[in-house]
Amino acid sequence: MNEVEQQFASDNYAGICPDAWAAMDEANRGHATAYGADQWTAKASDAFRDLFETRCEIFFAFNGTAANSLVLASLCQSYHSVICSDSAHIETDECGAPEFFSNGSKLLLAPSTNGKLTAGAIRSIATKRSDIHFPKPRVVSITQPTEMGEVYTVDEIRAISEVCRELGLRLHMDGARFANACASLDCSPAEMTWQAGVDVLCFGGTKNGMAFGEAVIFFDSSLAADFDYRCKQAGQLASKMRFLAAPWVRMLGNGSWLRNAAHANACARRFAEAAAHVPRVHLISKVEANAVFLKMPESMMEELRSRGWVFYTFIGGGARFMFAWDSLPVRINALVEDLKDLGRSVV
Ligand SMILES: *Cc1c(COP(=O)(O)O)cnc(C)c1O
Image 1: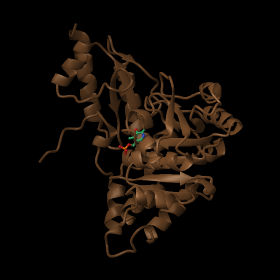
Image 2: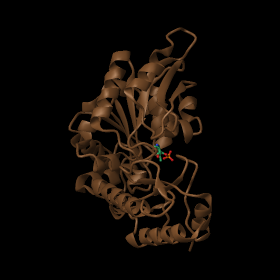
Image 3: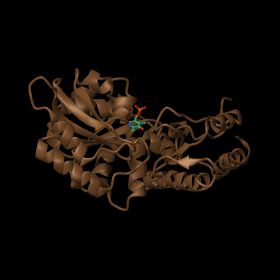
């Protein structure tokens, strides 16, 4: 057995949720047509069209790096550029895949403390240069919720898309935790995306409780031209596509996508409220999704680690704790108790 006690280092430490697992089991009862020409893929695409209340083009990729990179590659020529926050996953955690798949489109970074881009920052980056020597801005990419666990309001997204439209830029949303944003904001998936001016959304399934799989949703069908070829060429066309698609059919159908995310968000809030009362521990960012970032003395972090807790500090300048669909109250309490204990004792 190599089972580990539940940790909050990453929401990807969690396993597959019962609904995703059951859906794969159901899809496993016999043969089906390969490469996405099966009934689950068709049903999953329809489920997305129902959820977003619009006609849209849907594709399934194995992971978020591929989904984001291939979308950006399809929106850009090699001489184009993509405006994003300096903490965007596409910049910090995709090993140059967006530049690789786009044959060199450059990422233009806006400094940010909470991972958010603003309309003003986009305007200043996009209008700074317009000469032929500089890569031409073509796309804006925002992460919803951000890598720091904050959520763009619908008004903030609208303000961004207005600048995009004015300057001829396309708007991409990295929604690796899109479900958490939906659970956090009191608005529909449609209001947060195409109705607010988002052109393409990468909707994460993995962090929502699936084994793997992200859906790419083009709200402007003309942008989806040949995207299937791009996926195939990049090794992202699943021959047994039904196993990527079936979990979406069930989870969008019965609402567990939103319940999973709401649970994770609630766990983060509950942990943050308790942690904020511990001496010498401070919240670094707002807790609006399933992430909690804490600033505390080095010695406290060391002690936490020596008590067996695993967490990362390479994002956001603090200790990051992520909560998942299966986060257990008893483990959250145990972490809080250790923090309180160290808050009292460690110098
Ligand atoms: C997890 C994550 C992704 C996807 O990462 P993969 O490991 O490629 O699946 C993309 N964007 C953000 C913000 C993420 O947190």
